[in-house]
Image (cartoon, rainbow, N blue to C red):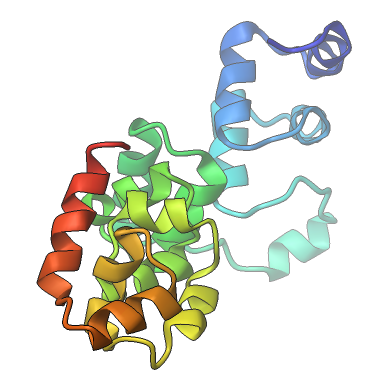
Length: 193
């Protein structure tokens, strides 16, 4: 629930509850909304342009004549953005996934959990699920560095998700426990999530 002071800021941009929601979904601040309003941009147009990375600023008419129109984002990027935003993913997170070339269906689970898109690629390559990656609470490179050499790379997700540290996993593996057995622990630990 926004504070009364926030409501005053939004009212400066002549905002209605619907336009405030539109602007907030585009990760716009009240200051951004006021600047777009001063330039005469409609609320939905301002949100669209803000998501596209454009920032509100006055441009002299001579510069407008010399500069070409900005290119429309690729259809695939727009579709990924649309799909992620409809799934309830915040605009800044959705934009990062769309710009990095993720497929909307593939990105949804990772983006909803707010896993950085670069980390998501590494975690996914290691065999982690989005929930397991989020549960580590660490960047993917940190996890990879900690587990480097402890167990084979393709087994990292199973051992980590089973709740073992790299040292514990290495000792278990040395004593004959297999990655398949760790996978059973992993599956059982998924019930607690």
